[in-house]
Image 1 (cartoon, one colour):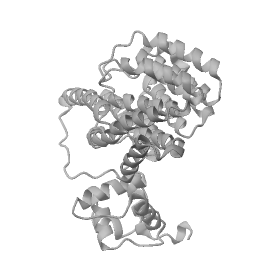
Image 2 (cartoon, one colour):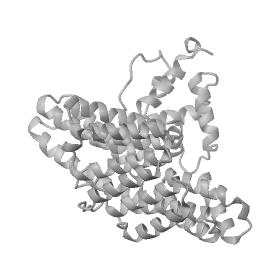
Image 3 (cartoon, helix red, strand yellow):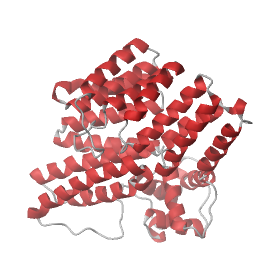
Image 4 (tube, rainbow, N blue to C red):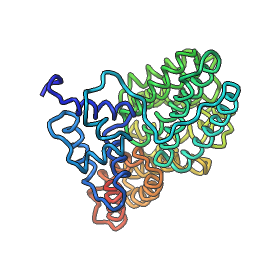
Length: 402
């Protein structure tokens, strides 16, 4: 069926999802929330397949599915399934409109939202994207409302903060494994930063794009975007430079260039030595890039370079130095350590360490960690009869199912 034959309601359904920067899995999650505990729904893969059919117009949702879709998208059935297809995108609707502050109150409102951003960063470090995305989206909605009447310097300050929140949303969706909204929020942050000439945020969105390219193992994009982020390196704060330089190292690891990779990690470690961070980014973007963080990245790179023994040694040195507030980074490091143990044939240690990482991944809702652990599970499949391996495989299967 071509686009001209697609029913208006199907076009409207897809547009409503994209307007809210939701992946199909993201829409499924909202449908489950709308259904509650008393209404069992099909598995996620089945619902995603249904959404593809609905958006293509080959099938129409039944009455129950229409109710859940309307609740998930905060639209009436008439808006979603009646009338003509939209010609332009629409803003996200909310159940209650935020009253607009008087112009003289803008400063107080923005200061409050800046403080909230630091608290949300800390919340993310402790609890992960599952518990943080809704709050970040709510604050972005407030900022979008503030943008409507804002002019002059007021608009500049609102956009500066909106770009910061949008970039945070990109990271949260990236960690949750939702690629499409992660890229959309990165683009939104970049656009807002470009409008006001915020060079630091533009550089940071390039860094974010480089990280996203890592997921697709696109080494050229990883290196190119990181180099773009460093183009104004003389004007960037030291923590940002440290984070971007270690990102370049990952690109070289993907290319199998160990010498360039390690040289850049050494440089990043030197830059990170001055970083003192409490997990709330009050030191600015990149303030998470402590010396311990760089050493964890060194271990990740050794793993990518297929040097598991060196990776194990690097992980074991770095893990005790990770600040407790970075709980999800610890989970990612433990997952990497499990993979390194598996790579050097330490089966029991790999399985036991993987279970520790899985506990953190489940609590935080970090799909990135789950992906690493899935590869660990595959590498241990020949030892599935060992009790520790069997226990890990069962726990992982339960985590993926939920």
